[in-house]
Image: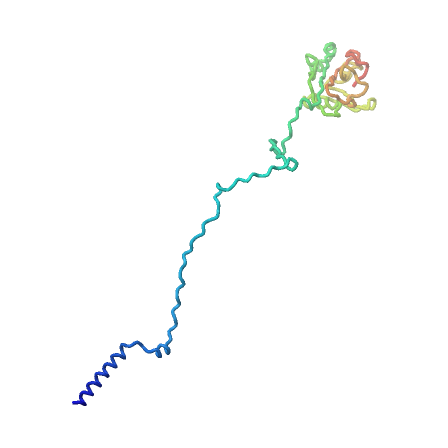
Length: 232
């Protein structure tokens, strides 16, 4: 009986030891042998608080006055020109133009028209004027002959001339198909400026502003038109 009792006690103790072995935590030696690496810890997230803006709205900024420019350094802004490229400043043409009064007449032949041939009679105007007195524009330096040429060309008036050594100038042979010697040996063309007959040819007479120039036909070497025997 005692032996059986010891056996029972031993069995109970063995069972108790086994049960306690299972429930007890692992020993420190096993922890030392199997060291686990520590898990990385997450850093605490710190909330970012936005800093208060230091910018000042535009309407809160102080207005700065620009410093006055010195009169000595200021540059005046030129006014914009109203003239277009390549456009000239208008000039008063009436003040800038040179003019003379010019005319061509054979009125003296009206007194002797019955002595002329029929062909010549048809060439003479009723009032005697081949070119009525008109203001003609000329340029500085032009002569009486220059004006005669231009007027006859523009008005389609026949005119014929030649150069004469006697006067060292142009000599007018005929105007409007009325020629020298058509009414005798003393007939021909003369010119007069401001009521006077110049002593030289018409291509040698320089015009002046306001001159009155006349070409006149004479039947008596100028005596019948107030001349002094000078033919143009």
